Image (cartoon, rainbow, N blue to C red; front, side, top):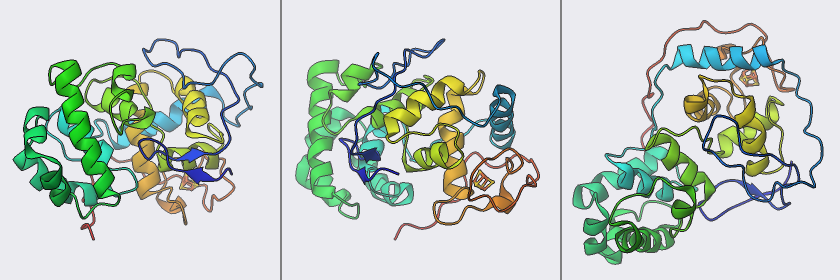
Length: 276
Ligand code: SF4
């Protein structure tokens, strides 16, 4: 697998540029990641039939009919700030810091008035907090100057904000505006490759291969289902195949069990471990 590096918004990213192509996904406003033009190789064949992919997402939908972001937020602005702060940090750690921050400022105007020093004080328990404090202030000022203090429902406008890259824009478009986007974080990148569902050397490749094979009506929530599956079951070091509801369908080399776990509805949000 390619070496991972940080991107503008902390998404996992590989050093090699994307090679395969993908057009706009049908039936969605989502645009393909940049750099995926005509000079593409054929898409790799995946070991799943379309009905098997549909069954995977059907089971996820039974487990969590209405999955929610684990980042605490009260409006599109606080969601945007929380996602910017979550780069290379845990959701639990971000939530611990943002409770105080958002109590003081939950609008761009209030955040700009709070100022960089106070923002930095609130988030100093999060990695890269100095840079993130600068970005939170700068994006608040940009929202006021360019968008009347509103978070735009527009990918290009979002990605033009300080500290906001494709992954952050995808999360905001999906969670705040209900669009069918797929923000490829470390969990989705791993699952796409491990299960051979959407193999790719970069998050852009995984996104462009994965989103088109997710059938309706599952595209809206595929993002959260895959993140939660990766965070709690198909974990990085040791996947918990005994607790996996798709164990019979999975084609991962790491699979240690082929009997699917009982399919029952789980809480939309699981209790989070305390932030350290
Ligand atoms: S069977 Fe194991 S490797 Fe496959 S998806 Fe489930 S947890 Fe992951």
